[in-house]
Image (cartoon, rainbow, N blue to C red; front, side, top):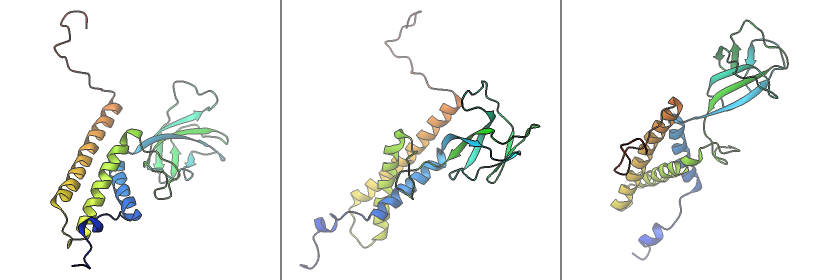
Length: 204
């Protein structure tokens, strides 16, 4: 009995850093499934032709829009959206005119959200309002993983319920975030409902 460490001592040790990283990686991966980031970049052509290499975009998932020809100093409005096809990392501009050397192609594309320092990422592209959601999923995942890794431990029931509750909160948050994102893209936003302080006359 003297050799058996007391419960407070067994549970006081922190998790390994790789466990925490794995939890954050899992939560970030689930977030990227529903809300990857859309961003913009410009490519200056070094050769003429309709086939434009996108190999310089290392985080490319898919292309959503292409503006060509594009003038960075004074872009014309409205944008000249052009038809295109994506063949792997090659963008084919489907236009009767052929792009020339020095032309600028403006590309809207989708990429995964990243966290600085995680998996060699050098910048954070995760939306600021998603921080709490990622933390909720990560801590729930880490706690549950620890419980499953040590089935012989007498893990308090409260800890199991806490881990399960955090993961449920995470999934609910993902659904809510996906709905907000879809509504924003659709251009439809909810308005506040009427209450007893609102007037039913001409003034509000």
